[in-house]
Length: 270
Ligand code: NAP
Image (cartoon, rainbow, N blue to C red; front, top):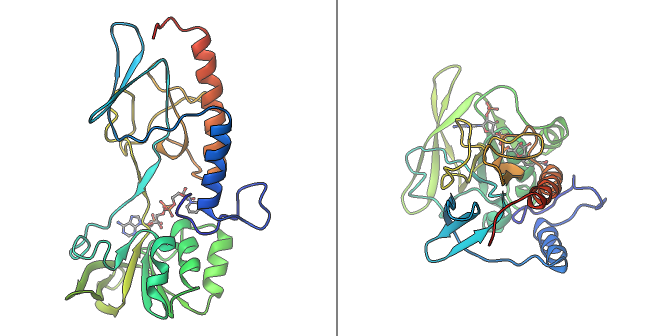
């Protein structure tokens, strides 16, 4: 949310709202209700055998808690092709909002055919001269309204049934090596930058206390309880069908409500 330029599908803002501004408003509102924010990278969650509570560990600090709601979200996936690491942050990006201004009147490509690829692509067209959207299938995954807008945008050209095999250049990106999956033909595309939107992976690597699916998404029931009594999960990091701000907010409310009910019947002394 915080790195999305314009959010137009969150209720209550008919003209849309900037993602960073919305995140600040949510933070301010949470603080008004007494939420305390601590900034720490968590390395492990454990159940304490002593008092039936939880210990949340970071490199240099431990937090003790009666219940936990995990809301660690997701991170954009990488392509894993030659040249990606070399040009990461120097021409290869997963954040159009952060980097679009670097590509004024330049030629840029996006990989992906989902909502992120088209949403961020439409934003990029405010800056770039030309945008190629490279997608591995002949059909896009994005919702129809985004497909319509992208197809009507004169700066956007789709390259379908095609994958990026290599990112080439000396000191900066110069070309993409492409492979057409239908004909197996190889071609080269001159670009100044590449934005990758090929899906998300959950930020749950550090969590081994609760059940996850084969992709790392946390398994919950309809009350957002995990298999460990007292640990809940909400938002993009759990298995769900729609990852949007509105569904994350709904998850947060439900998890908080059920965590409170759990606390009512808890026998844990902190
Ligand atoms: P996504 O829906 O998983 O789409 C990923 C796209 O990348 C797909 O088109 C997929 O192709 C392609 N892809 C995956 N791996 C690839 C690879 N190795 N090489 C080339 N292409 C690859 O991911 P997303 O677009 O980031 O969206 C994630 C979630 O956020 C979704 O639930 C989406 O609805 C939500 N979202 C919502 C909004 C909004 O509400 N406006 C905006 C952004 C995101 P295939 O189609 O062939 O699988």
